[in-house]
Length: 109
Length: 113
Image (cartoon, rainbow over all chains, first blue to last red; front, side, top):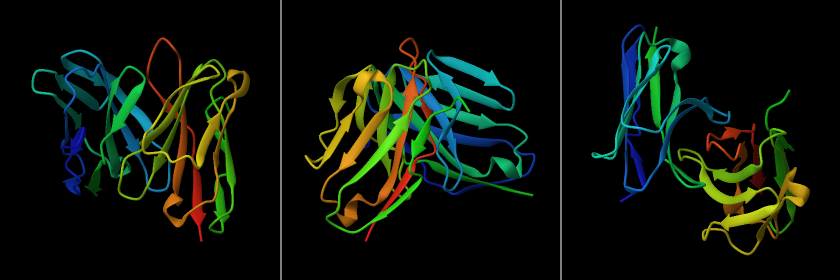
């Protein structure tokens, strides 16, 4: 079992739709949870961080955390073609951060 | 530009040669991380510094890899006797001690021929 698992995709959604990205993790002691966006050939950039159960909203992005189910999700509302990228889920315990392999998202104009 | 910087951005080398990469973190960040990323995978943890102390090194790293962070500022990652399997993007990230949000540099793409 991988420590952080994501559906590799690709996930294809039409412009203006909601994109839903999911992630599960294996270490129940994990403390911090992150979503990064990575464009092809570029380095990851932080979109959202979440530390406690529930929802956290930032603009068009909403992160959801359920520690009991060991599940993290990212919703992107009103998806734009510029959102097309790979989305990486990252889980931290102390200084150690484990990344998932990422989900490729395509937003069709 | 006050972000994380890395040099060189690209490095092509022949198998068996040594290479060294540099990372300059965000100035007030005392935590520094090195990752390696191959195509289709997420970043893989290599090593971690808090100030000048190297506190963790991945068991996946062979003895050919070494990292330093003198005076707790910039860091270098050296790969000795490079192998074709070392070809990857090498990413550096930094964070503040009171938060573990990591900010990544642009990466160094290594190609070993």
